Structures are given as structure tokens and as C-alpha cells.
Image 1 (cartoon, helix red, strand yellow):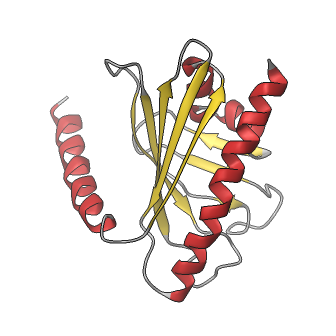
Image 2: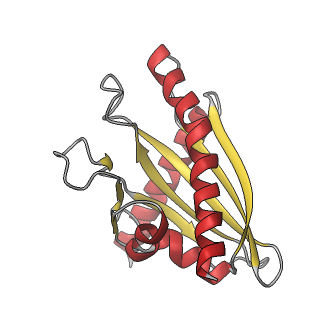
Length: 176
């Protein structure tokens, strides 16, 4: 228990330092309310089966701090070309007083951006109940650098995340 507490405190200190640095850099934000209850939405974003139902053909999710959070858009491609590989689950909040939930994970840049492809950024997704059958999604993507390559990545995700949340909303409406 003491070792776990020490590891958590170290992780928290690193997250605070990284968060302070990330606030000085660009951020992508998107917001969408979807037709789905909080439990369904939580399961879709925190399990491999859920992610595979709407986002990509292959996902690897280990539901623990430091566990894998990978989304493979091209599972048959060579390592490094499959998509969001080598991602890590940084944190989650499931039992907040207002019913909201949050998952935070690292995210890799697209394979066609070789100068920054191995770099990891951080995605934080908040799920906020908006009634019995709706959930508001608030997605923050941080950790972008300030080179031309990073600006290209930021512009890519400014378009990609709203499309992903739109695809997810459509998925929910088709499964009801």
C-alpha cells in the first residue's frame, strides 16, 4: 500500500508539472452532447470492446493506472504505423459527486508526421450526465509543441476530434 501511495504521489507531482507546462502550449478542445447514458458512454471509452465498436478495429485497454490505452486504426500495419500505439492510461475519475466521469490517456501523433510521431500528448475526456439518456463530452488535447510540425498536428486534431465525437454520436443513435 505504501509503495502504491508513493507511486501515486510521484505520478501526481509529474502531472502537476506537466499540466503547468502544457498550459503554456496550444490545446485542442471540443464539446458534444450525445444520446447515451453515462454508464454506456463510460464503457465505450474505457474498454477495448467499446472503442472497437465505434473508433477503430483494434484497441488495447488495461483498466489500471499506467496500463495500456492503444487505438489501432490499421492493425495489420507495421509497428509504428498502426495508429495511437504505446498509449498509457494516466488517470480516471469515476465516482464524482455530480456523476461526471473522466479518463486521461496519452496519445501519439499520426504516422505521417515522422518528426513528432514518437512524441506523446495527453487527452482528457470528461463525461458529464445531461439527463437520464444524454451525456456531454468535453475533450481536451494538450502537450503540443511549438514547431511547424506541431502546429500541423494541432490543426489535424482540431478537425479529427470533433469528427470522432460526431462518429461516436452517430454510433449511439444507431445502436439505440
